[in-house]
Amino acid sequence: MPIFFTHQNTPEKCNYQIFFAMNFLDSLQQTNEIASLPTVAAKLLQMLEQDDSDVRRLAHYVEQDVAISTKVVRVANSPMFGLRIPVASISQAIMTIGLTRVTNIVLGVSIFSKFVYLRTLAGAFLEQFWRHSAATATLARALASRAKLNFQEMEFLAGLVHDIGKLAMLQSDPERFRILLETIGSGTMDELEAEQQIYGATHAEAGELIANVWRLPSYVQGAIRLHHEGSCSVEDVAPLVAVVRIADYYAEEFGYGIGERHHTPIESHSYWHLLAQRAPETFADPAALCDYLEGELGTASALITALTSE
Ligand SMILES: [Fe+2]
Ligand SMILES: [Fe+2]
Image 1 (cartoon, helix red, strand yellow):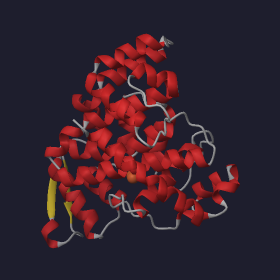
Image 2: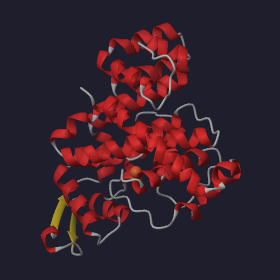
Image 3: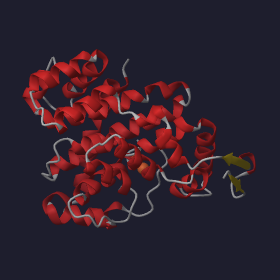
């Protein structure tokens, strides 16, 4: 049954009526383009699920995809990872930083690559989006390291893909996405409310659905789903969600935003308190932490280049 959608609260130039025959989340599941995880990443996850952890076989498989493995090596060698001796191949990367870490980097890089073609549809938005995602991944990693929380690079993957639902929205209907950006930009509605009205779902819900279809680690699914929620009741997922949420906040604060407004200072947020309990020394001085994180952002530009290079 088609849904007739009328929106009256946007500025005049944005007044519109939209027909859409199918719920966005349903259509997302049925779209082949989104339904498949990039081949290398899917195969890698499958091999790991089958307990096939023969490093040489895994490395060999990833190296078959020259474009992906070149980017993974570039990312591993970027200042963010601070390797003293640069790695030249996937197998060297696995030997140096470990299989789980490399797997999470491969997942992040290949998911990122999957959407690079959207550049022709919405170049300006994508540039901002990449900066934001890379900054969030960089900050999440820096924060986890400072707080001595070891997520085996899951914070990097989660930071990179936390807003992936937005790309699914863009991909599914560029015109509707343009209207969404205009609505959010006009300030008449907040981001999630506008998404709900225009797409019938938020980017957090869409992102979780994609991550679930792709069978990304359940922690990463949780981080995507909950990164705009006020709190997380699932105890073991909560620290990762908290790291991504705080990284997301600072990415916006430091000028790497995509218009995701945060209404309250992060120090009053439940996620801040959760991490402060686990690493009191890191969170005791918010100004010092903020300075540290801002300094770490310097490594994000190399990461963006590594991720978006052809
Ligand atoms: Fe978001
Ligand atoms: Fe974000």
